[in-house]
Structure formats: structure tokens, C-alpha cells
Length: 116
Length: 110
Image 1 (cartoon, rainbow over the protein chains, first blue to last red):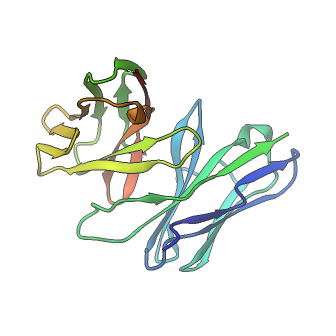
Image 2 (cartoon, chains in turn cyan, green; image 1 turned 180 degrees about the vertical axis):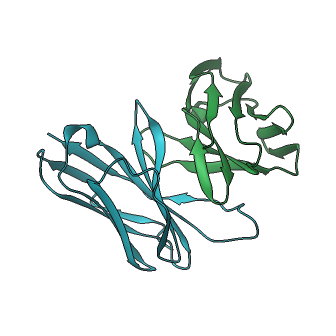
């Protein structure tokens, strides 16, 4: 398996533009997580899905952020309009449901977003 | 929600010495405690984890201990090597949601 795939790997855009980040989880995994990483705030969970259904979006910073998972092999995180403070590395991770909640999360390579 | 505190924020050790990173958590219902290693420019990767019904777990040079009463857990790296230089994150979880500590930058001096 190729692991979690994210695209693009780098994105540079101007303030006010729409940004779409994409993620393909590991085949067969039924949990998908979106994280944001910055020096100031560390690793923050934005939202996670189980079987394509959003379970907890309490980490989504504001209405400018939205995430979808139309099928088991694809998810998007959209920022509209983007702002300079959205500059960060965005990671997607997936995991396989196991007994209890003891399941390793596998991270993708991340998308480095720069908003000018 | 869960709050995870991690100390120290930076740690410099001589090659061959041991490194210890400590974390505390706030939610007594948390039952899974993974540790992730992130090399510069790379993704976080799981190096070891421990469940709430276990007090200690070891994997070669890495060990983790958990004190549920005190709500703290620690990572121990023995015989450190240059490739151990990275940022280490602790996390606590219940119901699949991970809350991460702020990270510890470990530098192993040759």
C-alpha cells in the first residue's frame, strides 16, 4: 500500500483565494483525520470522519473551513477565503477501527500551505 | 476537552546517554497514549504506544511508562544515537480523538 496520499505537497496562494487540499486514506481504513500543524499551536485536530461521516468538527477554526468525504477513498479540506494566518502544514491521517480505540493513526506527507 | 502538557520543550543529550520526556493529561477517561516521532520536514510516525491497562511497555531502546493515578506518562530512550534527533510528541486519546502535547525537540550530540 502506498500509505496516505496528500496533494498538493506545497501550495502558495494569495489572500482571499480558495484552497482545496486533498487526501486519499489507506485502503480499508475507516477513520480519517485532518490536522493542522504550526509552530505556535502545534498539532491540532480539525475534524475526523468515520465511514465517510463527520464525527467531530469542533476543531475547525471557523466557517471559512469545510471538509468533505464523498467516498471511502477521498477527502477534501477547503478554505474559502484563505488568510495569511491559515499558513501551516496540513496533515491527513487514517486508521483502522479496532477493539476499543487503540488504533494507530497513519499520517500522510502533509501539504505545506502558504497564504501571501 | 483533553489537555496534554509535555516537558521539556527541548532536550540535548550526549550520544549514548538516556533521554526522558514527560507528559501529563487532564481527562481521566483517556485510555490510549501513543508517542510520535517527527523528523524535520517529515510526517509524524508512531514509535510506541501504551494502553491504560498497562503500566510499562518496552521496545528495544524505547520504553514508555504510565501512571494513571497521577495522570502522567513518560518516554525513555536509552543509548541515544544521532538518528534519534527529532521532535517527539505525546498524545492522549479516548474514542479515537488524539490530543497532542506541544512536542519535545531532541538533539543528540555526537
